[in-house]
Every structure is written in structure tokens, then in C-alpha cells.
Image (cartoon, rainbow, N blue to C red; front, side, top):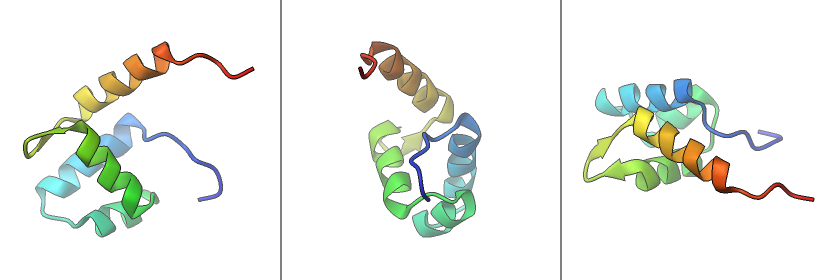
Length: 72
């Protein structure tokens, strides 16, 4: 993991599927080659109650990305 890469919609869908199948955060992280803390933050930021929606998480990411000011 040399450079930080944002989580893709495909990775979000994998997180959703694996989590619903009972996989641990460590197993999910290993499978999509992200750190455990990245998966943990993704779920905590984008879950409502016990529900995680990859499409809602992606939409939230896009909205935040549009609001960012480019670095000079």
C-alpha cells in the first residue's frame, strides 16, 4: 500500500457482500488489499444503524469530492 487510493464502488460492493456473509473486517481488508482501519472507517462513516449501502456511500463520496477545493 504505497499510495493512498480511494475506495471504488466495486470495493464498496465487496465490503457489503463480505460483511453480509459474516466475514471479519480483517478478512475483507486482506481480500481487497486495504488496511483494516480503512474498512473500519468506511463502515463507520457510511452505515446507518447496522445497514451499509455501497451506492449511498459512493454518492456521499462523490458529493464530498465535488465540494473539495483543488490544491495549488
